[in-house]
Amino acid sequence: MDIVDIVPVARGRVPADVLLKNCKIVNVFNGEIEEADIALFGKRIAGIGDYSMAHRTIDINGAYVVPGLIDAHMHIESSMVSPVEFAKAVLPRGTTTAIADPHEIANVLGLKGIEYMILSTEGVPLNLYIMLPSSVPATKMETNGATLGVINMIGFLEKHPRVLGLGEVMNYPDVINGDTESIAKIELLRHKYKKIDGHYPGGSGKDLNAYVAAFVRSDHECSNPEEAREKLARGMQILIREGSVA
Image (tube, rainbow, N blue to C red; front, side):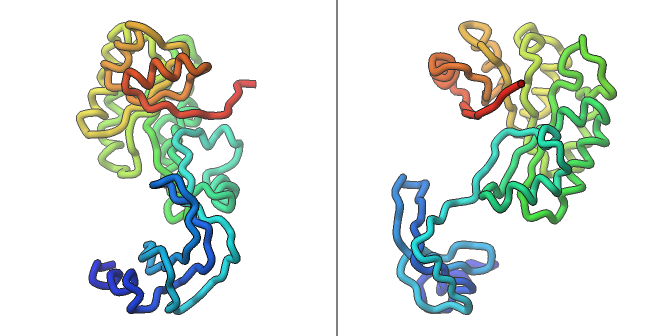
């Protein structure tokens, strides 16, 4: 789509492809609910306001319109369904993007399991991105079906552009103690400008400083507000989740 095509639609001089009338728009930019129409052109929102011309008009009668929700950290395997069935379940409920860490299937099948997650979702309406599992196996005490080392990751990153970064670095003892394999994975991903997800329950003080110094930039394991505040103060992005190991 060229800019020259969408600009006259935005100005109301050319019909929109689809016009949603009488919307209550949850505006995430200013935190307000705005009553307006939404003019759509191709895959983009051309404009918000008072519009009348369109090839197709849908009156949604004051229903709320929100941006697609992004699940920033999840494991499709935990849902006990295939990636395609997962997409069928979450899309109608507003989740349009999911960032998955397939470390469970990787623990069994290695790179083949990760490739299955990627290839089976080609063309699916859900935007599915992958964080490359950092801890396969999770610890040296685990009996695993596959091992994912830094040498396995190099070619995989070039082959699959939907890999956004390194999945939750749950083996935090190795990171803060300078384990060469764990650090090498982080170095590989960060030098390719990829994200590094964290997993450090109870992390605090100088050990937390060491974890953050290793370029880990998020955490979803805060158990109380104090822990979240400390990690936030160290520059980490805090993901708040409702989860259970039961």
